[in-house]
Image (cartoon, rainbow, N blue to C red):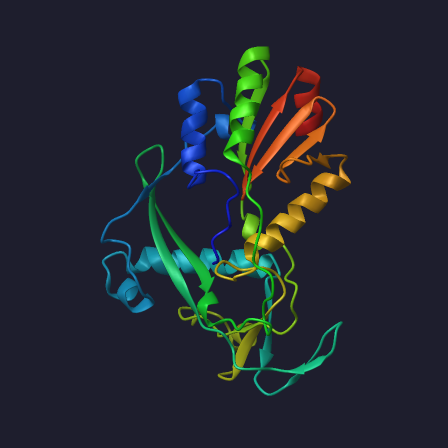
Length: 274
């Protein structure tokens, strides 16, 4: 996945942002976050680098179940359709013959839950480095909030006693519809439990309908998606920072898939949550 460009800031991750809020002592968790503690990612040798390594590991059963769960998520999300190589696909733009598909892989992560139990996660990722410019992607740039904007919002909240929520958008990069109708992906490994109708023939490939982790244009598609939604519910962009959105009594800062929202009244917060 292409790295989002940053304008005028030195923030490197959403985790750093969340830590900064907590250190300042003025951040409030969202209602959902207040009911559960965050999981901790385990970066160690028990996270297999490949599918074959996952099958050989002592946790092979858990990794297989993680693959099943992730596959169910992308299928329910209507992320792709199954087509055959060499067939003609009818799209709103044109009729295209299925081209050589892009590869994909599973990324495996172990996470520790608040109760100490281990959760196994498999993420389906397309090999975006195989994409070809001007064929299956164009623009990849997306703006990122300036650090000065965060400092200003936090300073105002501290001075006037405003409430602050820090929210993370779940599956943000899987929500937008893609801007191309010719991105094909190989069938992933590890889906042998599916019926022949569910996985197609040996010549089947996937045509993407929605974004998938690893696509070069995903950050831009997500930005356009969330920006369009915010404007539809009455927010307007700041002329100084495209990721600062304003509404009566509410200031919202977007940093990739994290939202920092501050309110000058309890009524404003209640309205925003609804």
